[in-house]
Amino acid sequence: AQKVTQAQTEISVVEKEDVTLDCVYETRDTTYYLFWYKQPPSGELVFLIRRNSFDEQNEISGRYSWNFQKSTSSFNFTITASQVVDSAVYFCALSEVKSTGANSKLTFGKGITLSVRP
Amino acid sequence: DTGVSQDPRHKITKRGQNVTFRCDPISEHNRLYWYRQTLGQGPEFLTYFQNEAQLEKSRLLSDRFSAERPKGSFSTLEIQRTEQGDSAMYLCASGWGGGATDTQYFGPGTRLTVL
Image 1 (tube, rainbow over the protein chains, first blue to last red):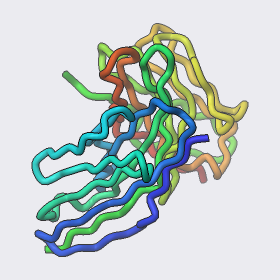
Image 2 (cartoon, chains in turn red, cyan):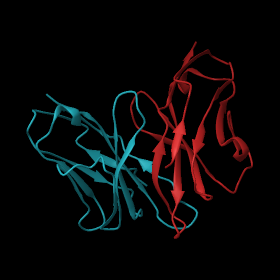
Image 3 (cartoon, rainbow over the protein chains, first blue to last red):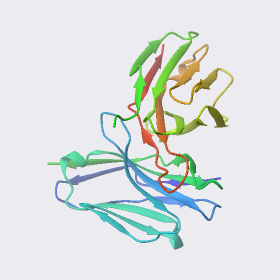
Image 4 (cartoon, chains in turn red, purple):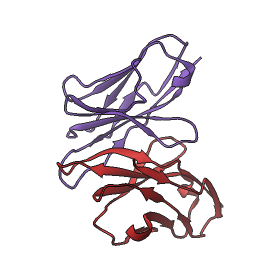
């Protein structure tokens, strides 16, 4: 069975601090996708990134960066120079890949509530 | 390109009543997913469709729950004889099944409160 663990439940930082959100996953599949979603107070889940299990390159997008390490089954997310607008719940998720190449249902972690104070 | 839409956004009902939610996916997406999210938890998978075919159902989807996607476009999720434990946010997502562009995009959700 697939499992995603987000051990941090709440993080509070002051604006402009860097913050890392941890994600550890378990799967028996050799091919899978990893995702991060943001859920602001409005409630709608916003897609941030998808990573294929064969692509261990780290990725940077503006102030966001992701570190994927298969050896430790981790897919951590770092926000550099955090801003108040980054305040939200962040979810890490995992999906298996079907023979068609399409991914299937997402298994989510419990989420990390990030509060960025001015 | 409009996103995923869900209707209604909020629903308050009395225990024992039936409720139906609607989801309109992104137009070119052939896959549609339903999830349920309770307070302080991540979304949990309920079921998904590829076109009009329901391909997988979670054991969370009891006999009181039924989902349809009759023409492969919009979908409905019905809960019969609602219970207080059904109170949750019901999320719909859509995606393109196939190739390297498999990402699920979520709608705003329908918040159900069962009194």
